[in-house]
Amino acid sequence: MAHMRSLALSDEEDLVHVFKTTAGQDIQKGGDAVLTIASYIWCRPYHLLAPGSSFVLDNGTGRVVGYIFSVPDTTAFVTWYKSTYLPYCHAHGIEPPEMEDGKPPSWSEDLAGALRGLVYTPEEMLHGDHPHLLEQYPAHLHIDILPEYQRQGWGKKLMEALVTKLQEQDVKGVHLVMAGDNVAAGKFYEAVGFERFGEVVDGGKSGENGRDEGGGVWYVRKL
Image (cartoon, rainbow, N blue to C red; front, side, top):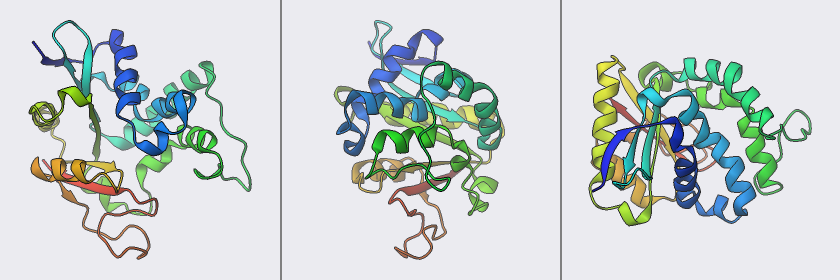
């Protein structure tokens, strides 16, 4: 029977499988090589650096079929990422992309290169142009569940377990960034207590609170 449990180091292969299966269509189109690079951004660092504030959904046989990753302090996580995780990426063949004028390639020009650029720019997680985000919501999270285990209440249970854990650590708020076209995910986050970040963050391009220049949407929840 499926159940939640703490994340284990031996879960890596299953976690990456869940990530690749549930990744957005823009990344899926890049094939397995691109999905592997993306896993070094949104999956592997949490498995290695934040097991204490993450939970997995186990199908009852030890296989992970979903997860919720979180870090209670994004600023501290970025510091740790630079000192500990970037050498790990380098050792596993994930190298920085070729830069032009100090900038990585765009997603439309070179998706793999753009993703490798994200691997090596963890400062993006700090959202430095909008300091109120981390001041109010210092934790952040990622949640993914295989399709066959969705719409069974597991997402809500994973979220409840994480919220309890963060509250025990006296974290005052948590945020996430989701693909702007993922309507179903937005409805889920709102149903479990999240709302859009209350500032325009794309320079007024959209005029919408919480929508960034890349089209993503920032959701927040006070704890």
